[in-house]
Length: 225
Image (cartoon, rainbow, N blue to C red; front, side, top):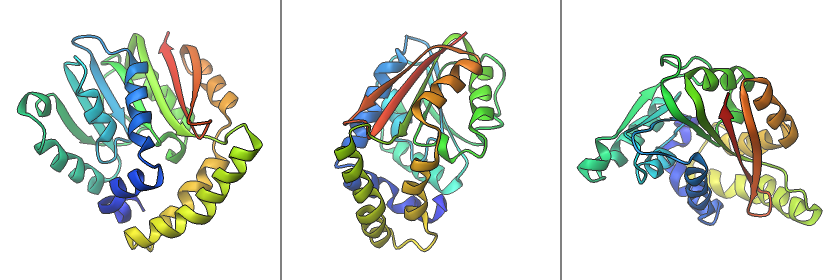
């Protein structure tokens, strides 16, 4: 499904978030509190937007991992357009969030943007994130949510379930049903409090949720115990 929409993925993200998707990613980078020499793993990196946003920090290495080869191919093409000093700190790996191909305690930051709800077993992914993080390492999750304000929630539902699937499908020429699945998956994903509880149960402390853009998006941050 994600292979089918890869070529128009960035365009649809920009148009249908009104450019807010990049703002959300920049906020996620600040929440990671990256230090000089850190190693960062960006899971479900897609075309590499958040991975490249981390390249503006003093991290020593940023690894983007994704399950979809077509997404990674686009990420690598975008990498070629970066200055050599920036591109040299990025690398991309094909892999599964539930079975990360990395050693224990090998990263200082793990991030995942708009991907945790697409993982078959989110708790298993959280355990993997905890495994590859060093003690004191930071986990940052960006994910869509149901706005708490009833009026905002009504409008967001109308937009995401009625308008966006039609226009995004038209732009992408998609026949896989991706843009019907994606908004529907938001309403069936873990509630905000449930995800915070799961983080605490899977080896994280200081878990917090920061609502963005009237609660349309939430940035979660937690620290590896």
